Amino acid sequence: MDPILHAFAAACTWQVLASTVFGSVVGVIFGSIPGLTFSMAIAMVLPITFGMASEPAIAMLLSAYIGGMTGGSISAVLIGVPGTPSAAATVLDGHPMAKKGQASLAIATATVVSGIGGILSLLIMLVSVHLLARVALAFGPAEITALVVFGLSTICGLAERSLLRGLIGGVLGLMVMSIGQDPLDGEARFTFGTVTLLQGIDLLVAMIGLFALPHVIIALTEWRRGHEKTLDRADVRVELPGLMLLLSRWGNILRSGVLGTVIGAIPGTGGPIAAFLAYDQARRFSKTPKEFGKGNIDGVIAPETANNAVTGGAMIPLLGLGIPGDPATALILGGLLIHGVQPGPLLFMEKPDVVAGIYVLFLLAYVVVIALQLFGVRWFVKALRVPPHLLSIGILVMCAVGSFAIRNTLFDVATMMVIGFLGYVLIRVKIPVVPVLLGLVLGPTLERESRTALIMSEGDLSVFFTSLPSLIFLLLAVLIIGAHVLGNMRAKAIVAAGKQKIDERRA
Image (tube, rainbow, N blue to C red; front, side, top):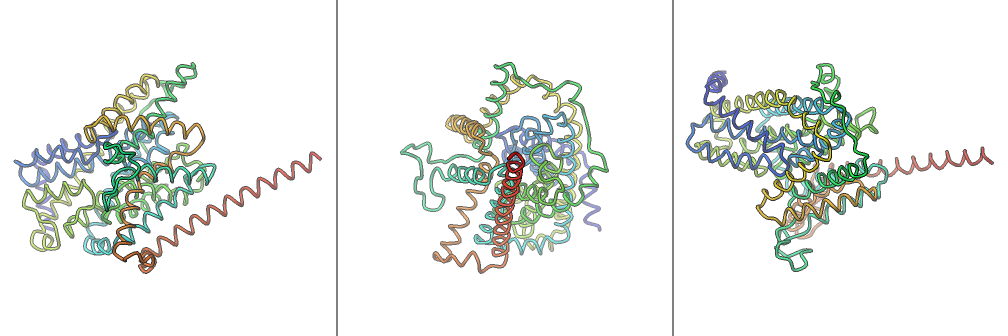
């Protein structure tokens, strides 16, 4: 207990508290602006920590990471554009809630469950860091490929009216992310001789275009035609989630938190995969699955709990093995090394006080981030009082700036515009954009890991079936796809039988 008590004493100093608040504010701001991710927030505060003591420096890095992950829900709910890729699934029900005047409830609930998910992941990390680190290390390319295939099977549940149209959307997303240089052998693909396309399509640029521009076009079109829909000012109110609302969803929160922690512990996966899998599982366990996508609070709780549980999960291989699972934890690893902290098994034996300090600073960061976002809810929801056509212009400017900031090139701004117009066309022809997003998010991981597995096995496809975790994920994917196909066939048969009975009565 002595290391924990010393860690709490160190966390109560004004330097640590000030660093945590500063990192949290930067993280929330970067996370809530589309195009400015928490990785950018960590990269920005990292140079500031060079001349600081280790405790305030680690506190600033962790709070920027956690604040950025949590802040992505703000823009996802208010304007329907995810601030970070991990908040993409939050858009599906968060923005419809905002349209119904429940933006404050959606943001506040997302904030609270984000904290619960993060703290749950911390508890799991405390009791099983070594075990989960070994399990995560056992996940090779074949296992991650199977996990991604399982994630792609959720397209069936997100396909809305037509499974075929959902599959078309998923394939389009996979095609877009294949543009550019081959990740393994460097061959140019679908570049048409254009040098600028060699860098490929950035995921954030594609996401911003897919969600933001169709919203802008629709808002301006409705305003031009005089059909603009505005929220009554009385509907834009501050509303926090009650204790009974959270307790009634304890199963969803617990399931999503554990799922997010486990996926976060697997290097190369991350928040988007965890969020979409949690969303799909919440819909499957729900008594009202048809309400998902229309403003169901469970559709906000599941992805936000899962993507914040990823933060604790990602720290497991980082602390236990010294292996970063994504760019954000790689930056944190750099910060730890600069301040003389060498993650790995020896860290737990030689410096238990440092490990205890990281745990306490992780907890402190979540407390501060939750307090900041709950305090800011009353200011966030005021954005909904702006007329939609004026708000859409601000969204367009913000998305253009965010797209440019990712790689400092106007090509990304033009790409965002092109993908946005394509997204608008897809909406007009009733092809759902969520499967497109899923293809965008999971496509690069699927290609990289599957080809790596085949290279390692010298082209032997049995590599995907000889591992137990891989086999389990593939069987689950087959079962999910089969269940959806049978369900669609049964629904069509019921509709056909109903029409036949009506025709017989008329005859």
